[in-house]
Image (cartoon, rainbow, N blue to C red; front, side, top):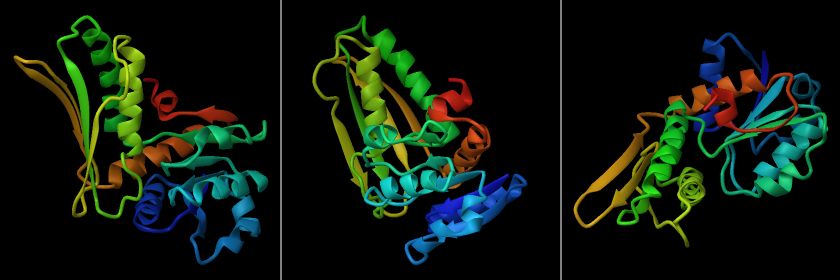
Length: 225
């Protein structure tokens, strides 16, 4: 498969390494210094683009890719997903999720199930703590927001916002903990990323799945969760 990379920082390099390991070709690498390469024939020849950039550039990157006929796997958080979905041509495809890690997507599934169980136990209240490296631009993380939204969707008794604490320190790839506290005990679900490799692997798997498909999809669909 021919992959175009949009964003060639730390994640872009790890995605490239992972894609090559899985037998794919990188046909274009677009970063802030060569935006004009969106207009290149090699970019238009890509089967799919994988986008990991910033909240302020993601929307333009996706729209430019679609204009060139290239579907997108987007890993950037903190941008107007619904607004961009509304602009998607019928012939194009987009996968967006707040986290491409296989483990985090399993956490999402467990989070929903636990929230359903906790509906019957009002003595427990949920909260979320997320920790990331100091370079992360958005807070709370997109993953934490997804966890909170899914808590409220699966546990009907919850009203108002689920508390989220955001911590930025060092080079932490990402830690997310969902806790349910009562006066007598607590119960927690935690995912701790050891490196960015897990996010890269998930993004490449998503790109493999998206090839030839149209419309908007999520990583939950990709993994059948």
